[in-house]
Length: 285
Image 1: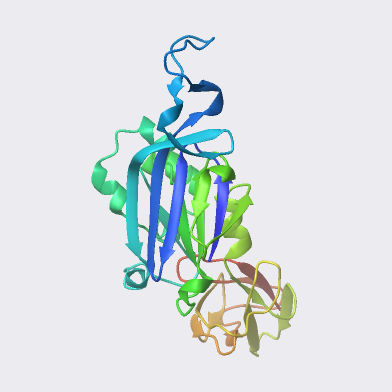
Image 2: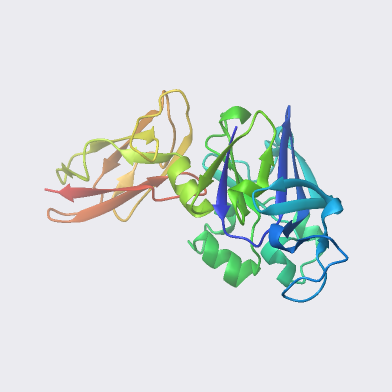
């Protein structure tokens, strides 16, 4: 499993372990190397050095010490039973560490694992704005699920840390530095795109097939997974607005009911909780 690190948090050490379907993460305290030494000696900036005998390991310029200050274990198999489990999902993780130390958040909040896209479906807010203005929190990480049918090995982890060197993961997790977790979501989760160009034509008395397919963000077709795809139109009539793909592809039929020559309808396609991954203009002739 891949774990992407976003460098957006205050310093702490993070241990991440995947044992079968159990994902555990442990937050541990750290001390910068320049402040570690003989506790009987005075530091030039004032105060005594931090006792070097308390350091259990070094991660770059940071010494790790003490027992975990926070830990959590999630059964990823049980996450499939989450009421918000869906295609194109981002389950958010929270912990009372790092930036979250600034907030007086009830402890029960940190046991929640909400799907970001369910929470932001109505407002269409991005994750940063949603957490800053609505929840007034800062997530420590996320679990990305590309499709409901995806095996757990295809899921992706992400954690907000100060530096990738502070992360230690079990052998079955690959740690990959990233810029932000928002960018990871954008570059990792699948999309639905229309086939055949940004626009098509239809006669006022006719109908036209609307074809679409699952793709990676880079535009590569996905043929070994399927999903429920949701469509909406600004005008006319869609014979089916929710379609299950087959081999990664699907279609519906559009009829320009109530429209005249020269009218244009915009059709959007996406997932249940993440709509509008692509647009298609239908020109009535």
